[in-house]
Length: 286
Length: 283
Image (cartoon, rainbow over all chains, first blue to last red; front, top):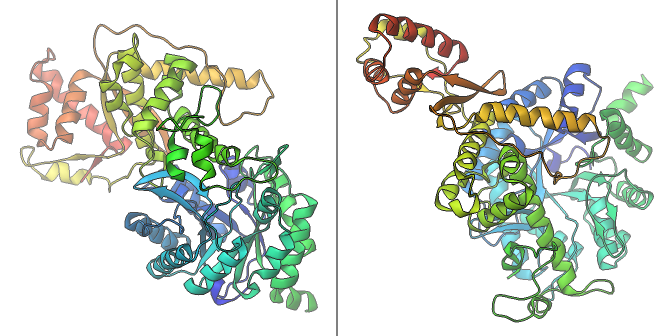
């Protein structure tokens, strides 16, 4: 939902992920884009080209931070050094909220750099919510947690993924970044109805939605972000918007990246389902 | 338990190892905590993650050390990469630091790079220096007036942290330029999409130089560059990095030099002019 406490009362429409192959096009042609999502870790550096480009982007565009290695689902508490760098970046970008994934990814100081699925247990609910609260308190920006695509399930799980997500966000009192492509991928890999997932999510907590493409193999689907969004995913998106209303929407395209125009065109297909903002309605009426 | 499975290297056929550390079938170990579904066994489901882990890390390592890969060849490089990553998996949230221990690892494992160990070591040092130069921290620039105002024996200058000074035996800067040209040429010759793991590179080789090659790896206008240094200039910069005063650094630089004293002063003046322009000197 737009303009809630989970989005810092901001109203964002359709954005795309800021990716290196598009830097030149964006900086030279300055296309009209509602907002960009950046991968926080790519800019949590001391100096050099990444920050130079980011500063130029920030002069003209709104940016939202998306992380890939906070690992809320780690049994260990969030890394302080990581948190400090993340907070410093939020000051630079003025991100209205930030997101990361409902997963684990490092153990005993060794990082997998993957978004690993969790056993959906009550114990995991507790430490995951604790970690999210700790991050949110430290960075002083609303946090949204994103559901991940998964390829494996645990015997130890005591609830469904969406029940787990609901329990975690309630206890952490945080927002949700609902990735409808991830819901589709996991629904195919684990055989459940994706609409059951969308219908169970607390709509008032959804701060942002991700859309993306994936790769279908013979016996499973991989979340590759290297294709256009397929119709069944748009169907899930449509349902999510029916429930959540106007919500900041972001297309992820991370591999075999086509031209900027093609990526932006694909993202803007979301406007078929997205209600207009109040500001646009007022301007149109005037 | 899941992490132990993921961190185990893949088989030569890029699959998950069928035998667990205690000799039991891995399938039995994995079935103890992962559910199968109607299409995949528990082993196959976890194998997806095992593969993703290794392919991701190997892809990043390969991208950071393309020159080393061209020196060693694909098979030898892959063997080195797996051996290295087993000991030095990623220990930070950023994959940028993945190669931070490679130079010391090569020093202690020459058997992985023989008979090109010296060349491999030089290449790894320059490629790691490139990582540092790309986004390493930058300190405020030195006020030129400070050099003028402070007596040389009390003047301590610092070098930007993103500048790496190297003494090499091989012309790595020229080799990397050749590699870049090879990559450009092969990109022009094919329209094929590039995957995360590149194909076999053209092998790069070079004879060891009779005299040391002194190289600074640095950045300017947000791009990484190499700059060859005269021996005395290298020694001067190393001395500054080691916190010598300007006077001491100059003395160290020309201690065993054949450069006449009259020319030395002129050289120092010119070097400092260039280094100031490049933004290497800091407070």
